[in-house]
Length: 257
Image (tube, rainbow, N blue to C red):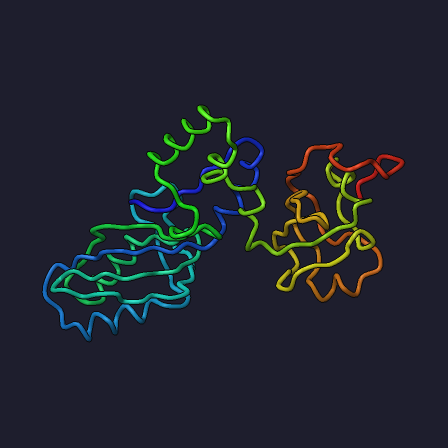
């Protein structure tokens, strides 16, 4: 497989869990084992959009039990003989080679995945800021020669980029340091928030300047949080910002901010 592979450095490795859970996009070349009318191939592939049942293949790093995965879209790009090229956007944990196998079973001819390229992983796309390892070596050497940080910025992005598609809650400056010490976020500390937050979903806590503070689990939906005057709205899971970045404005040890 080729394509997009985000790599995190230092404290940014704490955000990797968000990427593991984020949706992916692939371009796949599927090889049919015998000739099938093109219309029939398109018809069967269309059936694999939406929620599907999938058992991971034998060579997988997870238990081989049937699970539900969602295919957001599956677009046929080209069909030439037994070669079928398609683009697929899917939920994390979807096995494309298993989809190819299952398509072959439905067609009755058999099929396998010939090539696979990941074109998107969460907020990271192939066309935006992607670089090859050769680019990294060259840009790093130019930085060593010149000391110009611009060379590093061409392939090292802010940690906040990873959280681009994660629902966010923006908090008051007075609550930031308490959150950095592991406190949970309570309603008085909320300034604004994004739509799409549900009870139990992962959210990113941000400062008013757009700096990532931590990853947390929401204890209420967007609508419910807007109506709350007190109580915990998000439980801290993973602190991203170093302590002391913002002045301490809390007086005693507590589990909430």
